[in-house]
Length: 464
Image 1 (spheres, rainbow, N blue to C red):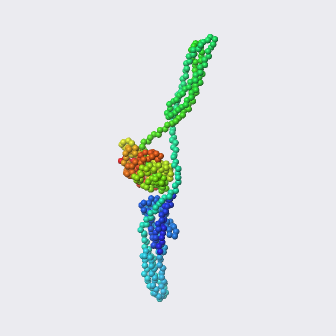
Image 2 (image 1 turned 180 degrees about the horizontal axis):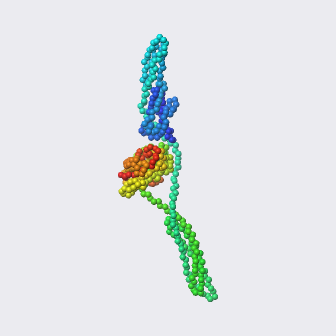
Image 3 (image 1 turned 135 degrees about the vertical axis):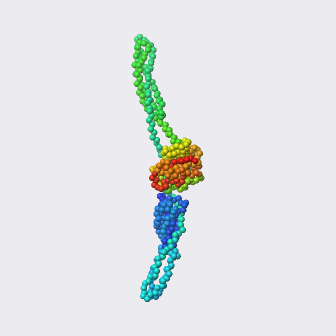
């Protein structure tokens, strides 16, 4: 009699719980089966393995993705094949001992041993403990087809409002010294019986517009109070003494004009988290919502040349880069460095060597990522910043100190993709323009072993 087992592999990743079932028939008392994935499976895990005949029992828990590729051995059993022969009593009459027949998989046959004696004595025959031949089945390859059904939480796109702190200390020293000394010449008509009385009224209006940088438009209201004290003499010339008392109210209106200084051409790094749920979110945005034919590095690897520019333009517009969705923590605009334009060799801001058109050192600290997971880093260079023509650029990378090459250096990115233009449209996580992207595969899937404990340093070596 054989026992049929259901072997069930369940993906226990958050939000997943997909399972794959395959039946296997056991015909031995004890039999081992190796469960493994083939090389095309993209599931991350962890995975639980269950077996079921009359019920379902967990036989292996929390298997890693690597263990599932190497193979996990589980033990199955057909209880009906586990036979233990019992002793056969003999009497005064010779009685042959029956020969138990054990199934061929046990490989044991008992030879009858007749026994004769005058005194009824129980003489046990050979006590046979069958030694089962364990049949290890050919490697059973279970290829689960995992169709992730993520629970998608709609996170509204947040456009952060950045209010720069502008410190403007204008030096306004309006020097207004009105000098009013009118000279009034009066030619009166002298009548011997009349003393002329003259009261001149002078109301000057002075409008002072000082030139102030930044744009300052002061409103100056000057209302002088003139108290003329004319002295009239019998002569025809009168010289009044005017004492102006100006009241000056200065109300400046400051309208600063801020012109940000240009940092020249910058290289940018996209830090894509390699956690299963983050990959599902990115893939859904690209392939389902925007019809891209590539859905991020985690599930698709390095992008191919087909639809290359369009796929990567969609990639740069993913809202997660700037909204800290899941493990998307630091935007690409904060992971940047200047590209050297001057001919010859020099040093970057970290003191590392820098040749013409090489990008300077970019430091990625453990606070700018989730140190408990891996990230994939792609490097984006504006074509205008590398001289307008470009084949490739080697890269240095390492941990612990600037200029380190503990990961490798110089490393050569994928030459095919590096030679293709990527047109980034407005509204992306980096400025619009034409870019070339450097892909270094597993070299840029970091850290090699989690958690990350040191700062990662990446810099350009040589443009080719």
